[in-house]
Image (cartoon, rainbow, N blue to C red; front, top):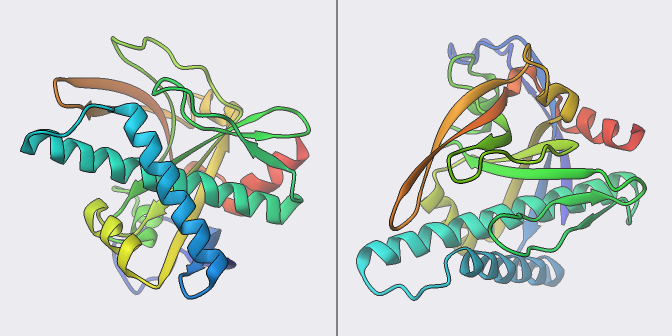
Length: 245
């Protein structure tokens, strides 16, 4: 795997919708399927993502609705574990091979987190798809994406806050991303910013957003704390902060 550092400058006036006045230093993980180790890691990530999706919804897919639901869960499982794996790889490359470790996935109520070895602080990794590209998700003042924090709903009134929250953005819509994951020789993952709990608990920084999560039989609306990327720390700043705490 290769780690590429790159800069996104939102002050680039070549496109009118890049209208946020800030700059980000980001990291991209690059897998090359022609390299044996990279292919083995992608195979492992896929297998683990599928296992996670089966724990979320273990029932057999018998009709078209269930098949679509199963496909969505598989995409979410693989893309989610890929994001976690890449942040794990990046942080251990940056700070030392034992800086973070994975927690065990037990059930749907407890997703996999990363844990900082020296102090047991938890890092929650989430991912999202932005079909207009990473720069749009970071730089568009109106439509910019968010660092997603703890949520609440009628089924799960509260979620325990984590010490850090980080994101991955995939620059295509979900189904195309899943197809690319299989078919492209080069697979890239963009690590895009984060926040610590102090930021996620500051009403001047976060806001409440509504998310509707659907399964086969129901639709549950959740409210979650969200920090716009424009108010977040970029990839290298949040990674450095993790090492300072």
